[in-house]
Amino acid sequence: DELIAAYEQIKVKIDARLPKLFNVEPKAPYIVKAVEAYRAQSAAGASYAGPAPDGSRPGIFYINTYNLKAQPKFLLETLSIHEAAPGHHFQIALQQEVQSLPDFRKFGGYTVFAEGWALYAESLGKELGLFTDPYMWYGRLNDEQLRAMRLVLDTGFHAKGWTRQQGIDYMLANSSMAKSDVIAEVERYIAWPGQALSYKLGEFKIKELRDYAHQQLGEQFDIKAFHTQILIDGALPMPILEQKIKRWVKSQQ
Image 1 (cartoon, helix red, strand yellow):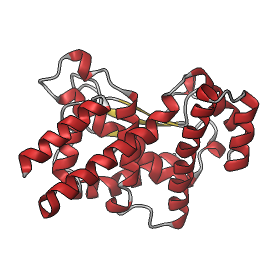
Image 2 (cartoon, one colour; image 1 turned 120 degrees about the vertical axis):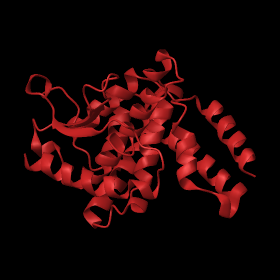
Image 3 (cartoon, helix red, strand yellow; image 1 turned 90 degrees about the vertical axis):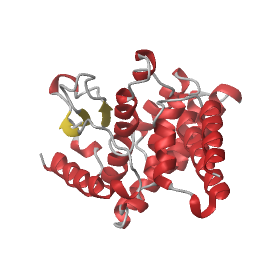
């Protein structure tokens, strides 16, 4: 209950600041909820489930309370903005609410877009008034380190011939993660080629497009309008997103 309450307090803090960076928000709300007991032992530490299309259920930011020792408090703010708002909740709920999209696009997606957006959302934390506590900032940097390691590990396994043990040794030498967590991460990367790259590559592209728009538009650049353009047509492949943003920039000049 204490952990859920802490996340709910962060939700209130974030929700109050979102209008600073967004002029379009999902109609569907989200709630913070503990993972159900029947699946808690095997569920992720934190995850997000989109709202029901008919509005009968809000989005859900799930927190796994099965093993509280595996829930470091320094990740509270980072996980909140990644999994909920303005991360996965904004991207997934808004996509479902776009009436012009066919169902296969409302409920489908591209990993590089979804995870790239959620990681980009983490980078907005200071603009949203978060990470003022050094402990929370450490959590943000800790997650950044993990996503950077994924670029090395996925490339090592699938392009450089790395062994499982090489990956384990690399993560143990370059992170503070427990060996059991390292093994789980390494086996995921081996079994799911390319997925681990999607976080940073998607974030890099969105940041690149933000820098491009800012450079081209100067004082006319509106961060709220930029975020709307990124999200309002649902998940897109990165080359299509780039074309779209460049067309939008041209229309604003």
